[in-house]
Image 1 (cartoon, rainbow, N blue to C red):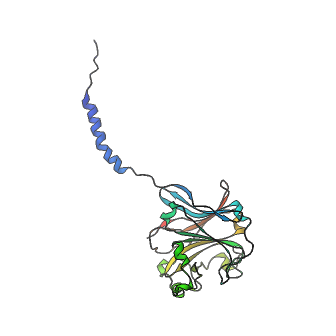
Image 2: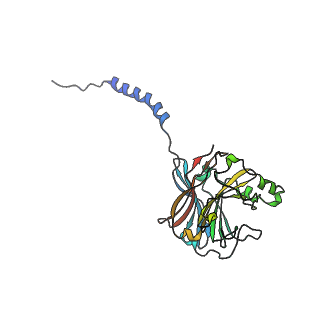
Length: 269
């Protein structure tokens, strides 16, 4: 008997109808992946090498926000200069941030090289880098001077207690022009009789916390460490963005760069 191949359209139509019903559900549940990867800002001269900012993103969330110094940046640095005083003389770079870093809420990165350190004498006078991560624009930072007329009043206006990172104190409401009032952790090793190698500060101005600041000696960087250290956090944060719960100092052998970064990010709010 000859077998006839008969086309039956009904089962195929049923499959098509089922697929049509499932498509909206699939479209609704499908999620576009967020930005992931390491993104760098533009390079700036530092010593015989360069410095540049970077951000590491994972599905749209920040993992690290830092500064990368090339291996050559540790050499050829000025040997003279002193910061944080009326006659401050140090190397300062305002580094551009990659566009991907905007989600963090940080807007300005200032990198300072202090060949002879700065105040207080006997504590922070070792040659070191200051890494300032600001939540204000560079224009706002530059406007923080005695020419304001309200400079001292704004310096003396501390953030409310809930906005101050736990454990941090400000020795005096004295703002450094174009920088702010510094807050320290009194339990830090260098404030308890040990040599300064690396530490973490915060800064405020006009009632707001405006910067986070790892300070790292050149000598410590040259040991090529790989450490992640927790920092004090506030009970509450204002504005959109993310705040760090730790900072990291590391050497990346593949890219041959030293990295100092804010990390352990948690959303503000």
